Length: 328
Image (cartoon, rainbow, N blue to C red; front, side, top):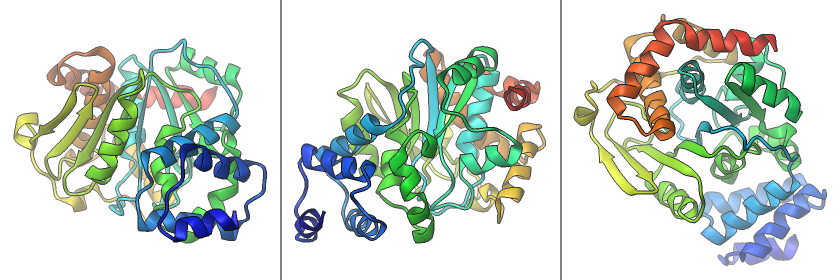
């Protein structure tokens, strides 16, 4: 590892195989926490290359607990995090709305490291029991329409690094890798990123796969559709600009999307929105993200899918999905 770090500190890059071997050494316990911090620092000063990302991801997926959920036409809605906007848990809420609309969701996430409250913090607070048992996850998908994959119990490397990431408290390369590591390998993904360079990197990667995807970026730096600015969207058909006017939406103030100061407060906000009691800004932002996810799944218009998302939330179907999930 010493040679690799010296190589990187001289502003060199790794081949795909070198990158793969670095992360395989993580999984074998051959890299300590100080070396992990050093490696993280390198990629906070420059973006990883496509070859490095492919090598890191290959190693992480090779060493993770394997499950097979490919019989489901499911979607993951996820953001990279690290945008330092401290929003409430928009993508996780959108997942329950999509499931409430009758679609399948395989959500992958973790505890917050660069944010106050990650999706795992919310679900644990609400009483969800994490599992990596394939039969349990299939049961959740079949009976409820959604399952949740807590990253650290699938990826030993991420479990090892979780304390390092939390102590650093800033975005790291693992914010970038996380959305690529869903062990359930859903066929569809709505992926939010916090900058256009990263959006293009993901776009290049996914173009060589069979995944049906949309990569979204709000131009004022949010890793989701925030309705605080216009957005850029990348799909297998290329890139597209959406203005708020085209979406028929009002521009919201960023303060209207702020989350709470701790997990308990964010859990209360989560339940309030899912109960239909959120503010106009909170509800509209969650609905537009769910709308884009539904459009990926069914190829119907945004207008039609907005109505489906709205019905899922206002009828209580989305909240009922959460209730059912917590009883399994």
